[in-house]
Structure formats: structure tokens, C-alpha cells
Length: 317
Image (cartoon, rainbow, N blue to C red):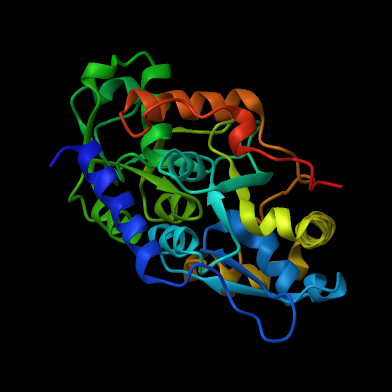
């Protein structure tokens, strides 16, 4: 099964889920916002807003539903079981191209400065010391995902020809982490905080995505929900922005939330640096267009998605 076929099969499952699950949530006591998230470290502001009562402070009844994997979350969004969700930049564009009427309303984290989200890592005691040495060396990734995109961008930027890039499929992030540490794979692409955890176990970074703006995370809503409830979306974003301010001004005060909700590895619970979050902004046009072009070249999209069709920044205050 080719990579593209596998990806289209996955979205076929999403479409089937849309047939068999309810098309929209029913709320007995007024509007209730069902927002999906995962334990990714970049989702911390959503959990802070929930834990600190910032959503309720805006008059919102928000239920943050935690999924173990991004795939489960995305299927729930496509099925109408969620009103919105936390996501990487790539997934909403792919879902939009596969018929889902969703919009990205804000960017909540990016990697433009010294902040990394992903890294290509070599196993402990590896002979590899740089990305350019990885010609024909399989890198463990999840195909047609943001980590796949970051892996390709980092390797080609190092001077490695695209035809010399080799990968091995490993959808499960935790398993990919263990495979690297035990030497079952020579190289793997991992997200934070597993990058830092792997460093602590002797693995080494060959390259990371700090400075690569396309590996950002976003907040997504179903277009139908956002159009029907614009004030609720604005208040949701206002609460997340307040959470960002709390994290920046007093990072230690949210450490316990980060350890619990983002499922920090035990060896990092006291030492891992709380990420910095900037005020919410719209995803930038250049990054969206680059991702859209890449997905089109991969055959995931029939045509590139125009920026205005997937981004709506009017809810930012």
C-alpha cells in the first residue's frame, strides 16, 4: 500500500465516521463547546484555561475532551462530535481538502525563533553526527504528517537530495521513541518533550525545526459552529490568550498542569522548561501555502487550498 493510498484510506475512515456518528452535538442547557485536544506540549494553554476557570470566566461552558492520538481527535472533529480542536498546521489543510468544512482561527505556537517542536535524532552511541550523513538511512516517522513534512524540510535544507531520503513507518510516537532508544532504528523524528527525554537517555539531535515556521500548532473550529457562535469563539480565544499570559508571567505555577495534562515523562517533571507562548495570531499565509503545496505534490490534495478558504482570523480580538 503506497503512502498516499494509506493517507487517503485514513480520510476514508473519517468520512465513514461522519456517516455513523451524530452530525452535531446536542446541549441540553444552552451552548456547550466541545473542544478536542491531545497531550502535545503545545496544547498547554488550553489545559491552563480549563484548569484555571478562564473559559467559565468568559461565560463559556467548555468541555476539553482529551484524545490519546491525533487521529482519534481528527475523526471526532470530522464526525461532528467536536466543535473545535487543537491541531498541527498540516492536518486541517488536509481535512479541508477532503471535504471537511473547518477553519483555522488562530496560531498558538510556532518555531520561528529558538523554539523547537520536532527533531531528527540518532540513537545512543550512533555513528551519525549530521543530517547530510543520512542518505538512504531510514528515519522513523509517521508518513504524510507534520513530522514527515519537518523531516523532509530539514533533510533537504541540509543538502540531502530528496531522492536520497529514506523513511520507515512508525505511527505510534511512544513506540518510535522506544525503538530509537533501544537501537531498533538508527534515526527517528520525535516531538518535544520526547526530544528532551531522548537526550536524557543518550540520544543526540542531528537537526531540529527551530526557525522552521511551518511546524506550528493552531486552533480549529467547524465552520458551521463558528458562524453560528462567533462570540463564543472570540471568548474561547480570549481565554486561551489569558492562559498564554499566565504561562509566560509565572511558568512554575502551571508546571503541575503540564505534568498531568501533557503527560510529561517522569524524568522531566521537575526540569523540563515550560514552553513560551506568544499572543494568538492568524496562521501566516506563507506557511499555509507551503504546506498546501506539499500536500498537493504528495497527491493528498487534488488542488492547493487557498489561504482564505482555511484561515479566518476575524475571531481574534
